[in-house]
Picture 1 (tube, rainbow, N blue to C red):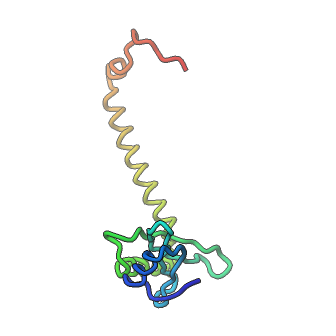
Picture 2: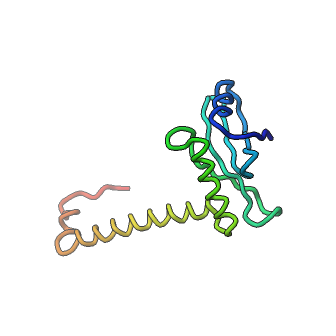
Picture 3: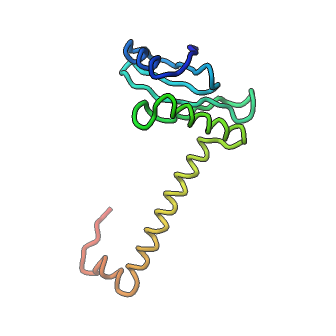
Length: 135
């Protein structure tokens, strides 16, 4: 497991040499960068939610490039590790946020559908003379 300071200079050196692997930051425990042979890099946070006996989890902050630089990714990793210290799992909170966004979007769609099908709306959508598709 390679450790060192995650900076723009070290990242550029890893990408130029097409090194695949992880570089873990020596200042912020759990923050690192994953590089691929293809020349891409992603900033990651590794943490445990419950001590030594729980599984290690990784969260991808984002790929190298706009808006993620080593310094902005380090700040985000610090924020995420603060959440982990408070007992909040970043992966689960992200999944919950996405699930709520989908549920809200579906609720709006269903409300619009029921409003448009009042009265003769349903007949307008599926006239009786139209042949039904056979499944």
